[in-house]
Amino acid sequence: MSTLLLVALVAALVGVGLVLMPLTLRFSLQARGEPNGFWALGGGVQLGPFAGSGVAAKGVPAQLALHAFGRKLWSRRLGEAGAERAEPEEPAEPPAKTKLRERYSKLERWFDPVDLFFFLVHERRRIELLPTIVDLEYGFRDIATTGKLLGAIYAISPLLPAPILVRQSPSWESLDRASLASSGAIRLWPGLLVVDAAWYLIRNVKVRRPNGAAGGTREAT
Image (cartoon, rainbow, N blue to C red; front, side, top):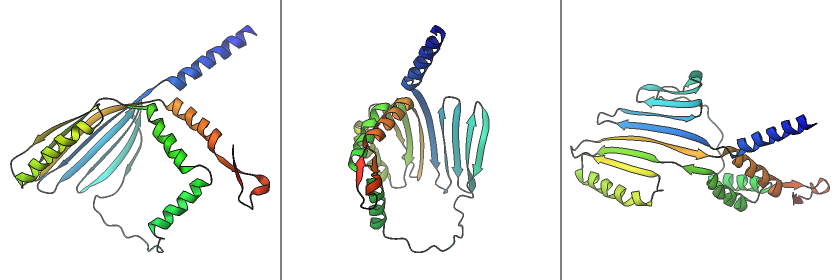
């Protein structure tokens, strides 16, 4: 009996540790545009032994890939950049406002949308942005435009979250070109996110009464 209790205690401690353990999601992004119209974009994310990457460029098929423990698990080409694809004709869709009302009504059957919004905002405490660096290099034919962008970025930078550092290098060569390089990390607590979501569902999900389904009567659990 004591052995079973010990095993249960160890399992409980392991479960609590997994719930409280944070994970670090690392990401990077690079983009470049040249005066001759060439552009390229690439980025990747890494979470422990798992990683995902994507690249795209003018005239080159965009590609996505997933890796685990250094091995490629999946990859896919998205087609030629800028290629036009013939799509079958589809019936006219309802206006955007009508679709938005329908989606709101469907959500309202199960949750209070306003309460759900505040819950999601509150869950930011389970996500922490770590130091992130953004390097910008840009220039325009119109030097005045370069100067305006330089001033605008200087004005916006203090308003960004403290972990985000923007470093810019304007070019005064009267050429339209730009590049961006960013890298950083996000610490998150997926176990606590799952626990919070489960507790929110238990307290707030709306279910129909068996004898009131026809009348549309609902009751919160």
